[in-house]
Length: 217
Image (cartoon, rainbow, N blue to C red; front, side, top):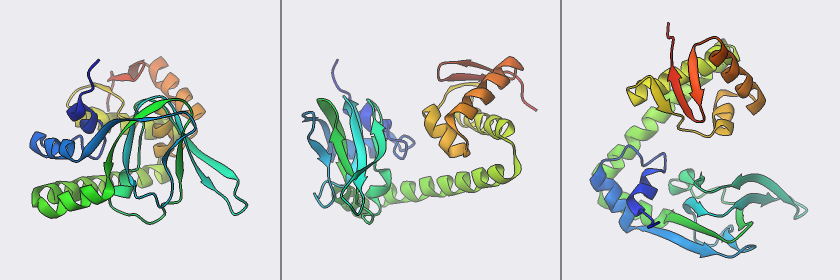
């Protein structure tokens, strides 16, 4: 199957709401399907390759080194996983490694190239500011929910937000379930239980990552 560069860019959460012409500008500064052999490093601190990266195929581990030089695994990237959105705006804290666990391909946008594009494009800069504003509002709302709602109502309120954003009672979860659990401040096991409860109560229908809100207050 031919790799669709525009579609690849559009899957990065911070870029997905950009107008088409701006996403096409991002395609021009992006690298696609770069190949990495098993055991090679996709990124290491100070390599000048700080970027947002999407794993197009294969598997990779993200880790840092402690004071004794021992690996501390942060996460494992699977096909379709995205890492490093924050690095496009802040190069500090670049202390992680990404190593291919099997032969892999990755797509990326270098931080320096992205910053240069922002300087040339006020429209891109404005859209990025608006996107961060939305994320700040969402983060504040989630913080309030963590402090005031139990896990079930917290999950349901978030699902209703996703339905509103999609403009439909049926939508695809925008996050992997482990990431949704992290966002809600609960364990993946608790998330699974709360999904099961909502489905049993007839409040939602859940088929894989596709959710339908059946009842809403």
